[in-house]
Amino acid sequence: MSKPAVLVARAVFPEVLERLSQHFEVSSNQADDTWSADELAARLAGQQGVFTTASERIDAALLARCPELKIAANMAVGYNNFDLDAMTARGVLATNAPDVLTETTADFGFALLMATARRIAESEHYLRAGQWTKWSYDLFAGSDIHGATLGILGMGRIGQGIARRGAHGFGMDVIYHNRSRLTPALEAECKARYVSKEELLRQADHLVLVLPYSAASHHAIGAAELAQMKPTATLVNIARGGIVDDAALAAALRGKRIAAAGLDVFEGEPAVHPGLLTVPNVVLTPHIASASVPTRLAMANLAADNLIGYLTQGKPLTPLNDAVLAKG
Ligand code: 8YV
Image (cartoon, rainbow, N blue to C red; front, side, top):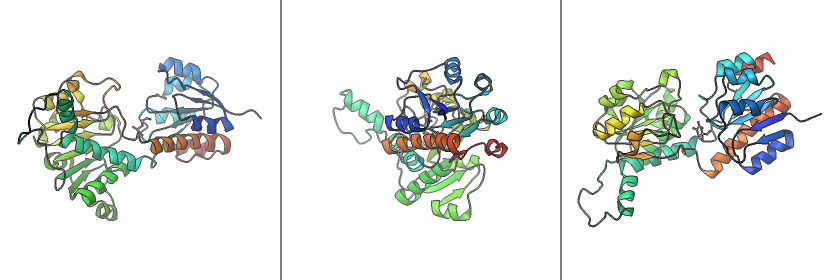
């Protein structure tokens, strides 16, 4: 029996490609070329599975051109690149890569918060530029992390990881807002108190965004929300571009409406709003929150396991649209 055909749309660890090749006829993109939607659709013709990252969009237009596709396995926990309704309607299974990146991403959220509040990037640039000529009492004085109020918008697994780090590691007072409230047991474990979004904005010294992107969370933080925050506050976005109105944030940073921001994700990335590139009080990183070597390998292996599990035994590990499985 011939092996199913699978396309790996982006470059990936060679050992993961090797595992896939044991089960599938694999076409891959080890050159990591940027494919247009049209090129992706053309390359997907005749393939039963596709290994994607958050950069590849799987929607109705693409699916109409790939009738043999059975599964798209995302090497990401976020899946706003998938039109789930269109996939379900076409009987295409969607899977993501949850859990394996939770702690690594929470570590990074905390690192970005600390770098931002303590002005690490800004001061390093100053030093490298040869501008450091003497010590002074207020040189790059920032805000404290220990004992401060940590606000978390989006209290899923990664949000809870950040809450634990803040509460248990840094003695922070943790407040959160989420679509649904955590169980009392989880709230106690995270030492986190549920508040309204308005209270979160008004009370947080440091606000971390960890919510999924959807039409409902588009520009969840815009000019009106930034205006409610403390002028001394720090904002960190490790969730998705589009949750923050980047133009409004650039204006707020320039006008010192809030003290600083740390951003790992951007509207329209890899493009970055030019206003963010010219203000000093923002730390910018290129969507690397999950980028530790072991975690990226675990994410890639989970995406591969989903392809192998589904295409060889009908058993994916982390399906997103169970309705496809129910249909058989
Ligand atoms: C990925 C992410 O690295 O998992 C996610 O949702 O944003 C990152 O961890 C990125 O999306 C590549 O797929």
